[in-house]
Length: 366
Figure: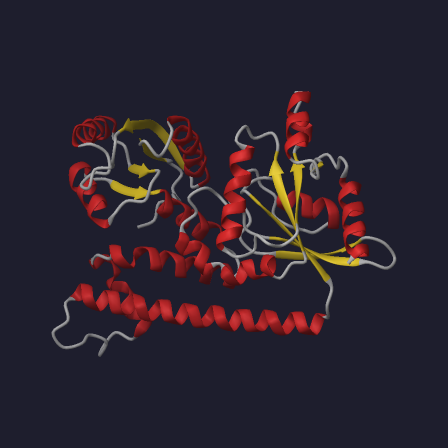
């Protein structure tokens, strides 16, 4: 079920977070602020936020039954369109909430997947997103997926004695298999193109979503790329040549940004896009220094790179958006914690030559 609204009227949403002994309230509040930004990116409007503190999550409703009834009353009295949980729900929990409230119920993973689907432009990105969505939805299937029979064959696809739901699941698994083969072909095409292009030093821009990676790529290379102040504006990898001097030119790539609680289905599906990062000789980790949670975002990116086995590559932190900062203590604190980092502004073209100088030094040594 789609969340992304194509209507002029925004869908109203209630966000729900849970504080447990493992998660401090400040951490949950930070994530809910980010979830609200995701809702805005998807075209929705946050109407209310609920936070409950419990020792453990509830198996039936994730939060307690009493709080669930309170939220249900609010939803019905205020004509709310969607409930969105900051943590992943089980299929049973979603069904329980839908029966309780009679409205659409999704979690952060479903919202992120929907935003990716809305922003996917290239064949590769669309294939990767569809694969991630189907992998996520497979254990959540209902009879709404019968339309997939048209893609796989229709007559003759139903086995003897199968229920409709079993048929739907088989059709989705077949579609997943086709998508994986499509991505393998796309990856082989990329490998062939890289061989034909010869060997150049490769630099990949990585970082949290909306830190200014696309803006930096444009500022350094003049690349015609989409630049938008929203989460996940960039899904497709864009690679451009960056001339450092008469003797050295590198390939600079901008790829999809990361985010906290990024669905593992999405990471797995985007392996071909992230191959550019895996093959890079150097990673430039772009950080929005004006974001109050920038240190948390650095850790999220580092953890994801570790999960992808990319964390052992040489990486340099680039603190971006310094033009938005007036407190000198912030520069001092960041510089002390990350002494090798550079401080720049991609939008104001501040100290961008420092990046080129760094790249010249790095690849001259190699």
